Length: 171
Image 1 (spheres, one colour):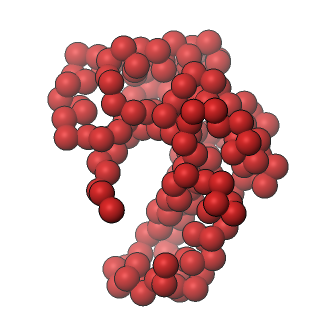
Image 2: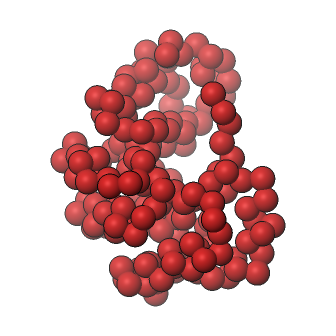
């Protein structure tokens, strides 16, 4: 198992990172393009495409296309259909990874999983409340995110005051 260092790009306009990209990506294995954090003036699909193209010109690292919803700690407040459209845009543009939140319907997840082309799909779950997850509950989350083996990567981000909670899990 290899550790992966991800740098999340939270710029409202990715072109602002151009002069510093060499320093930003130093030591990173992958860059995360946070589509949900782009300036609202850049929210049209054509503007998002231009942002992705700019990032591709700035770096040769693999790119994770992420549209994080408000409920999962992001800024996206649109409908499920709008989310799927943005995720499909990331697939069509050639993102190396597309992050699909596990909170969306099975239909929405399947829409991406069935047409992922060359992209690898990360299914993710985020909970930054103080909820305590038992090992059994976390195992259920992981199993659900695995989507019967269709997901390439499963990501769970939770807040915990008990670090042993992770080691208690039965993989």
